[in-house]
Length: 242
Picture (cartoon, rainbow, N blue to C red):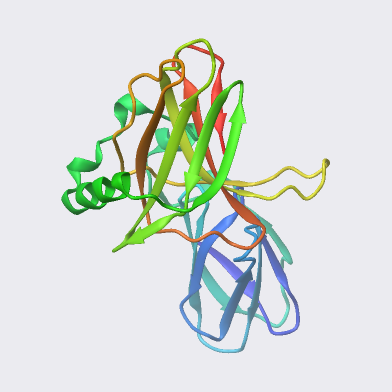
């Protein structure tokens, strides 16, 4: 593990290849601060006199970094830059980070999770308040109020095909996206893992309307971020998003 030096007078900057998701130090004498509300690649390190400790950092791509922390009055470095190669381990499978989308054919159905299945079926029969509604290329998607049950979140959606051509869902992605900060600023995305889908349609004919429920791990939406859902057409260019 790399050794990082810090003191109480200077801010030592640590730059990571991806935004920081979580970080913890071994003792309160060593403080590592980062933006939890709007994830960034930058973290700031300070230290009080005392015995060495350690720092553990996890970025948005689930790369894990580990460091030894030591107090020193005279600092050899004020800025440290790290790459993915500096990570000691990756928590999730590498293939998952290559795309934000996943084929519907590869997603487990909600019945593979017993209590998720029963609650998802319950939501299919309920009339929930509409959260958002959006249409593109005559494909409409309606998002109802997000429901939380036990340790999971449930997205109740309705898909409506107003086009003259059938729509076959191919890939679906769910993520959190930072709201636009102006045309020159690029937004950030954080992928949400899909645990299962109940009642997803194999095909949407002209004029057809189908309801489905997506099962996700429980999550929260930070301020100035929004929930985004994208469904792409199988072997086609059309898509619907909200």
